[in-house]
Length: 128
Image (cartoon, rainbow, N blue to C red; front, side, top):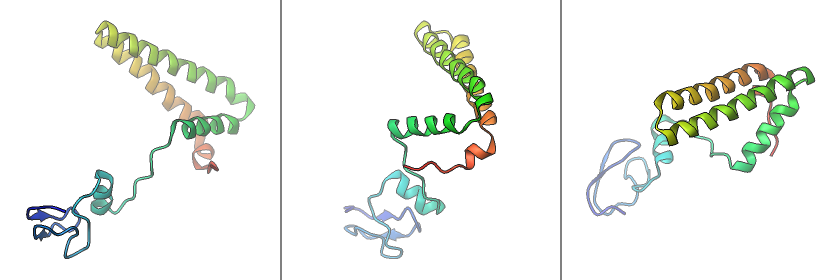
């Protein structure tokens, strides 16, 4: 509950001190960034996946690939890992060139994996 006049994040109306919700639209005076973004844009953000859910999703992506694509997919994952190692070493050696090279390796490996995966993998629903 705000002890001052406050502006609603949703409808931008000015509210009286002590009000816990907007008197015009009912939006809370105290809200998280995600709640404010959802109120402003109307788009609900999906919750972040846990590490275990991300691993399960990656495993499902690899399982869905045909056999002939799997060696390429594993090679791209190895390039992505090497890129992250180069990136980490660049941070410790304070080398901007090494940091950018590592980021580029990891990024392009991920892009090529998404291309390799194709539309069928992107549209596939992964059960939880």
